[in-house]
Length: 313
Image 1 (cartoon, rainbow, N blue to C red):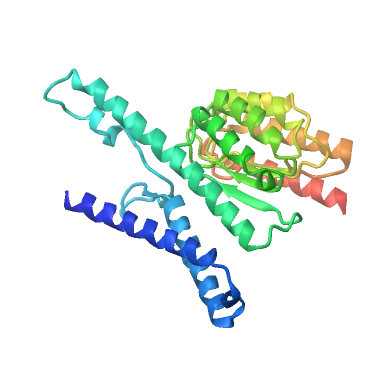
Image 2 (image 1 turned 90 degrees about the horizontal axis):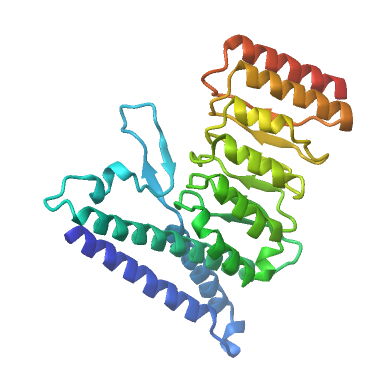
């Protein structure tokens, strides 16, 4: 109870500070032209950004100091740690508790979307809304899933000046699956005309089915860099990828920390050769830390990549 009270108090204080900072930033009159007030406004803006950043960035610890797992950003709603997964005196209460947990998670995600939209908008306004500035939008580790795509679409749509200039979208460490990827490309990516980098890393529900979905939509986008690190991609995913023809401008695909085997590596090498023969351009495909790839498989892949790069010089 004491912990919750302290957390609520800190959150309340942050909210009050943010409100005061916004009020100071919106001050008008002759005094705005004075150097001391401009300095205070700048300091107030930095304080506001720090407050917003703290509210939009989650953190979680995987493992303990005695393991090889490292700290990583993001929220953690592990099912094994949720009340509904524990022992209950009245078993019939489990479903009710589960529904409450789902609502809490949904509220958390929606708050994260709103907070990030607010933060990006504030930073853009402070920078003068230069139409040439490219923006970075992140929802790393927010339990974001396909069910939340509609809200993200609506919130970005209300900020058209932001939507038109997002060049990097980070949705890593979330709960997107194949269906969620379909919704994402249809309703969000399709509305971002200069989106050149998309990070979907550490979405463990994606798997090979999501690769098939991605291949259906990538060709109609301007994405040049795609991160799919630790997304459960195996040789079946590579077979989907082999049937896909990369756009000429595509530059990099991150497939590290997946489940690819030597056969999948051979498929990737074939793709690289085909793309380079067609466009005279090299695609950097990263496959490090795929635990099922043999040392010989890595050595052959490295050799092929070096040969392709040297042929371009």
